[in-house]
Amino acid sequence: MSELLGTGVGRGVAHGHVLRMADPLGEPSTAALEGSADDAKQAVATALAAVADDLNKRGQLAGGDAQAVLEAQALMAQDPTLLDDVHARIDGGTNAERAVFEAFGQFRDLLVQMGGYMGERAADLDDVAQRIVAKLRGVPAPGVPESDTPFVLVARDLAPADTALLDLDKVLALVTRDGGPTSHTAILARAKGITAIVGVTGADELTDGLHVVVDAAAGTVVTDPSESLVAEVDQRIADRLAAAAAPLTAGTLADGTAVPLLANLGSPADAAGAVALGAEGVGLFRTEFLFLDSPKAPTVEQQTESYRQLLEAFPGKKVVVRALDAGADKPLPFLTDKDEENPALGRRGLRALRNHPEVLRDQLTALAQADAVTEADLWVMAPMVADAEETVYFVDLARELGIRTAGVMAEVPSLALMAEQVFQTADFVSIGTNDLTQYTMAADRMLGTVASYQDPWHPAVLRLVAQLGSAGAAAGKPVGICGEAAADPLLAVVLVGLGATTLSMTPAALADVRAELGRHTLEQAREMATAALAASTAAAAKSAAAAAHAA
Ligand code: PEP
Ligand code: MG
Image 1 (cartoon, rainbow, N blue to C red):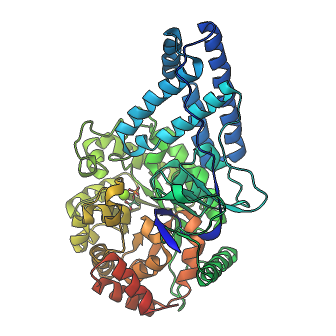
Image 2 (image 1 turned 45 degrees about the vertical axis):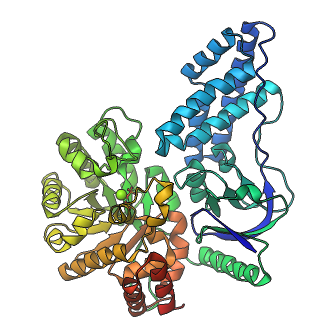
Image 3 (image 1 turned 30 degrees about the vertical axis):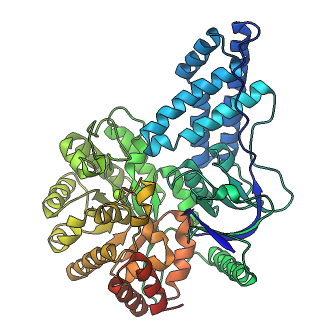
């Protein structure tokens, strides 16, 4: 057996035989253009139209998040600036395939230089270029291999067009050499519930037919697994299937303590899917996702309509909406300062809203209006709040504009350290463990090189959660968790032991967390939390928690 490491997406585990995706088409030759420039331009136009059409059709077939991604790719294929560049190269005597390759390649390099979210779109653009070159060459576009039996798909990187249409009966798991946790491959794999590991060093060594175990929870690919490991994996797969098929009961510990399981959503369109997976409400609605492409601040009417749609999907249920969290990896042109050297430490979240109070007032007004005509129990919270003074600012404004329940997110360590004062004003606190970990450990959550610091199991992060939990209990007010940590079943139990009263996560994780909660009592969860707090590293905290109460 040998082990390769990468970044796991979701909690799945699988084993099977490797089938590699064909490597990309060979680079087009630099031979000079033969024939007329007009003919070459016509051939490119036909190829572009066919590729855009194909991507749009695949999008319609796939629906949901995948459709938006594939339609964005179709738009790339028809980008007028890129086409001008291709034409200029053809006019300069370059052959059509080469002209497409060079024009798209130049734009790709620009995206890579921009890094972060934009850098991760480079794979999308490469895929479009490959499809156009394949059309010009008259060969099939590179894609997922055909097989009669299930397999583990290994690829250099997977294009969104391929990820979206993966046949879940055939693809047991996905392993890619490239890509980070925010690449589209990861986003789509998470939404589809595919066991996946991205950014696997050494993935090129995984050859066709090799037997591998893919463990997303551990972020490992084990080659030539032993019989006992395979048996253990089969047991885990059976447990997960049982959890997924279990009745959609409310989140409850083994002793009957209720721990409501809520959904993290980014669009009202995702509400039905969350309800189908048993979400008891919404613990985090990321409003900024609705407006990422808007050059101007959305109007009150526009927002009221979106919030009304969301609230209507949850009559009688709790829905926690977050005020716009602009900045860092989610810039909004109408809120975000340009040219900040360290945008994650800049004017983001509530700081940006306070700098544009009219935007915050409009959003709170729209929320209050949507609340007035629907039956959900609306709670509203502010992101990136540093202390009690900022809490008072937000909660007072929210109440003035008609919001009944107003709270803050705990994402900045200073807020956790000031928890008692914060609870004097806030109706509730929701802990964003993604940012709380980033800021506690001083490790950029977008940066692969410091990914090992981005571990919410770190006792430093757990201590801050414990402080918030105790302050919430003393004040008799709810403390939710809405970062990715709540989707880690064992950590979810520890967070409850530290005082979390609700857990909110990507809906695909609800079944695993529901099952794990049912294996521990509140007293056991507290013992696990105490053991984790006493550890000195993230790994030690995890083992200590597991050892404190093996379910
Ligand atoms: C968090 O920081 O944990 C959180 C839930 O907010 P986001 O991931 O949107 O920054
Ligand atoms: Mg956050």
